[in-house]
Length: 163
View 1: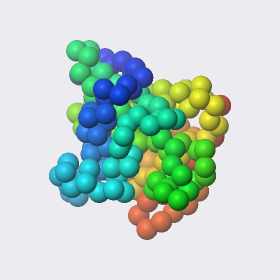
View 2: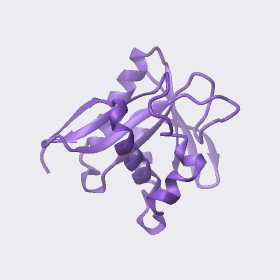
View 3: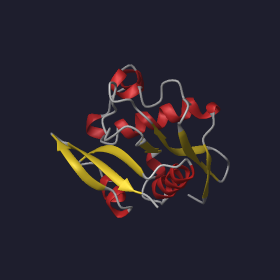
C-alpha cells in the first residue's frame, strides 16, 4: 500500500469526513447501510453536521498521492443533545473512520494519536467514544488506554484519560 501522512482536518474535509462517518457506521459488511440512510439519521449525522463547529478538531490521513484514506475527529455535545458516547460536558466525543483497504495498517492508530495530541493542545483531559462490542476497532481503543464505563445492548461507551 505504501506510506501515509497525517494532517489537521479543515472545513474542506467535511465531505470526506462524512464518507468516513459512513465507513465507521458500516464497520460490519453484513449490516452495511447506504450513505444516504446513514447521513439522514440525525443520531449519526450530528457527528459531522456543520463541520467544523467551535471546539471541533480532527485529523485526516493521506496516502502517498495525497488522497484522503481516513479521518478521526472530536466534537463536544451538550447534555440536552448528547452523542452516543457522551460522558460529561467538556469531554469531546470522537469518531474514527478508515477506508477498508487501509485498515489494520496503522492508519487508525496514527489518527487516534493525532486527535489525542489535538485534544491535549485544546486543554482537554479526556476523550470519549461509543463502539459496538463486535467492532474490531474496540481492540485499538483498549490498546490506546480507553476503558469501558458503560455498556448498553451491543455497544460500549469508552473513555481515555489523556496526558
